[in-house]
Every structure is written in structure tokens, then in C-alpha cells.
Image (tube, rainbow, N blue to C red):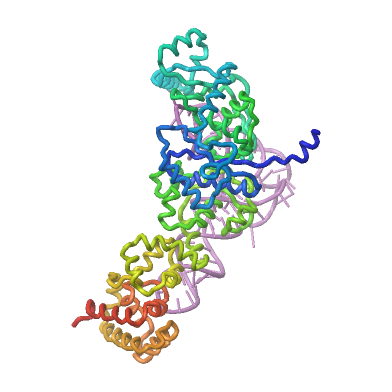
Length: 496
RNA sequence: GGCCCCUUCGUCUAAUCGGUGAGGACACCAGCCUUUCAAGCUGGCAGCAGGGGUUCGAAUCCCCUAGGGGUCACCA
């Protein structure tokens, strides 16, 4: 019997990502979600999305929607949770209040928790005194000693009260962490923390322990900031007679100035990256490498490859400072290596957002795909694709000032451009190779270097000094538009 | 301040049980390619926080110091 249990009952892995809808999903949160997801997809278990919305003041449905759509955009799917159902629901903590109340009641009845009537002011004063005496700020445990009569009296008096857990004063708790090994905490440093607030809602430390157990979570993978809370949760779990899940505390992601990540550090929310034109593939790849490595020198990883080789043991212990430059590079890499059609589809919404360009596009004969093909090699984001495409669609583009000074200033530039326009007028077919040949031979005829023709021509046709292959641009625009642009430049810059 | 975690190029990281010229990537610089700008290719710069041990031998093990981060909320 026992043997059977030991050898054959391979426990199914169940993990949860439990955001609280009090803000956008930011890079730190995504990385935690990602590691949960990679782990569970590697092990073939269940991913649970639980919404930790016990903070009624700060939670909002807008943030919830945003978090969910961020997860979807990144392709981090879940097997149980909002929109997915599951037999351990509900998956919103705000809908599980009776469960917490029941568990709190059990603790209260066994004398493992007690009511505390201390006011915020009293606690504040207590803490202040402790700080002055250079003692760690801890709850004194005053209300522990209340007699039942006193307790009833205070309750009847109508003041608000909370429920605190009665913590053991002696001994220590060892947290076994997959990433960090064994971490020991002395009970002397732990005070009686609040498990139920005065509004009746559970605190994080309480609700999360109850739910992790009730939802049969086997591995709690979360940010390192929770490591210090873990002994409290472990003690709580033991008092409730729960089994303890395996823990893995992943290192934090820090801002470039080494501080904790926040809004003031620029883009940190997933939505911002999306709006910037970062591809989910790139963001996932980048985050995968932030705190984890496959063990070899591979930097570009598909999702499938990562799922195959992911393990918590290879997660690094030290916090990572996130630095956009590598993400941007990765994004550029994906932009130029993914299927052209895919990149075009992804870029489309960015074109649509630009009303002027979108209107011009719809009137033109150009295919966006052809434009994307030319510009994607030299940009890093989807948004930049649009910026690099302006002159394909608009005729009244501005001319680069420095370029004008440099390329339009020479004596004979006007003459050369006239010759160029004349030549172009006759080119047939109006295609890249032929265009190149004709302009080259024009250069020989005029006895000027190709640059003397190409550089000013580029400026005439695009208003810019840099960009895709000039002949590709000319060919794509077509003869009519190109000649019109020569006319415009002539009027603007070479009027006698 | 107490407790806990962490420390390899500027940044992300690799280095099976201690033996490596400490490897890769981004960034930066240079060269090549070239009609511009990119991309690409080639090369370069750059690191074991400091100090003690243990050992024939330490980035790797131990101790101390320093630095960074987390936590000590009726936030998660």
C-alpha cells in the first residue's frame, strides 16, 4: 500500500499567478507569471489565475481587464481562473469570503487567533516608541491577554477590531525554497500579524495561504519580496492543518538606478510596451533571460524551446536590473526575422492609429506589406515602422534640414537632378535593377560619382538622407510620384 | 534599526564534484561590406566587491567587512 503511494502517485503540478488588480501588469509581475507558466508547461500541470482582490479600496475592474488582456497578449494562458472556469473556484478572493471567515473562526475557537481592539493611533504610537528605543517595530500582543469578559465588553462598545494570529514565541521555522535552499527564521522576530481586517476582509497572508491550500497549489512561485512573509504563512498553514507547498522565490527586477521598479522609471507596464510597438515574442524572450538561462549561449529562444528546457533550479538568485536596450535589440531582431506577413499584420494597427497616413494609404495603390519589407530592416519597433514609412504615403513630407544644406547646395546639383529626372522618365520597366543601371550610366555620362546623383535624389524623393535602398524606394513609388517629387523639389529649392 | 536574501565585464548572464587564457549576448569602439542608413560579418574594450582562511590549487568551500535589495501595513 504504502509503496504504491510512494512510487506511482506522481503528484500533478499546480501553480498560480495571483495578481491584485490595483495597478497595471508590469515587467516584474509578468516575469513572475512567465516563470510560473514556463514551469507548469514544462511539467505538464495546471496554471491557475487567481485574482487577489482583498484590497477593496485600491482594486478596480479596469486594472483587472488590463491585466487579463496583457496576459492574453503575451500568450500566457491559464487552465483555471477568470474566463476559464475550474473546479476550485471561485477564483476571485472577494468571492471567497465565507471560506476565510470559516477558517478564521476555526483559529479563533482553538485559541490560535484572537480579537485585537487596538486603534491605528495606538499602534502608531507603540511603533514610534519602539523606533525611538531602537527596537524593531512589532505589535506588543497587548490584546492577547484580554479576558473573555473584557473582549465582549469591547465588542459591545462598538469599536472596530481585527483578528490576529497568535504566533509561537519560541523556536524557528525553516522555509525550503527551490531557488534559495533552506532559510531559517527565528520566531522571536515574528509578531502577531493581522489575518482579518476590521472590515471583515482577510489580509494577503491569510487569504493566500487558505487559497493555495484549497486550490491544491503544489508550487508557489513568486517574487522574492514575499520570502520574509513565508514563515508567517507556513506557521498559519500548520495551525490550520494544511500541507505546505513548495516555494520558489524568484529574484526581483530592479530599475536601472537599483531601486524598486515603479511608474517613474518609464515604461514598466506591459501595455506601454505594446503601445510602443514591442512584440510579445521579444518581451517574452527578454524576460525569459532576465534571471534564467538555458545553460548554453543561446540568446534567441522560441517559446517552445524555453518550455522544453525551463527549470526552477536554473533561476538565478540575484536581482536583475532591467535595461531596455537588449529588449529593443531583440525586438529589432524579431522584426527582421519573422515572416513578412506576420510583421505586417502586427504593424497594421500602428498604421491605422495614424489617421493621416491611413487615409493616404487607402487612396494609394501601395501595399503596406511592400513598404514594411523595405523599412523593417532598419527599425526597432512597430511604431518606428510607421515613422519610417511616412514618405511612401504622404507627398508633403518635410526635407531634412542638414541634408538640404549638404546635398542641394552645390552649383550643379540642380542640373544633375534635372538630368536624373529626365533619365528616370525614360526608364522602362521602372524596376530596381533597371533603375540602378540607368542611374549608374548617367553618372558615367556626367562624369560624377554615383553619390552625387543618389544622395540628392534620395532627398528629393524621401526628404531624408537615410533609409532603404534608393532604387527599391523609387521602384515602389512608381514613375508618376517620383517625377512629381522632382517637380516639387525643383520649385522649392532650385527656382531661379 | 532587527531579520532575511544577494554580490562574475556598464547591463543580462555561463563556468558539471574546487584545476578555464573566466565564455556568450546587449551596449560601446574599429574594420569589412556598401548608393545613404541600417542589417550582416570580423576584431577590440571591459568583470570574479574587499580582506582573511581551508587547499598542491578557490570565481567556486568557510569566516569577516562593505555594498545592494527585500521585509517588519487593517498593500499584495
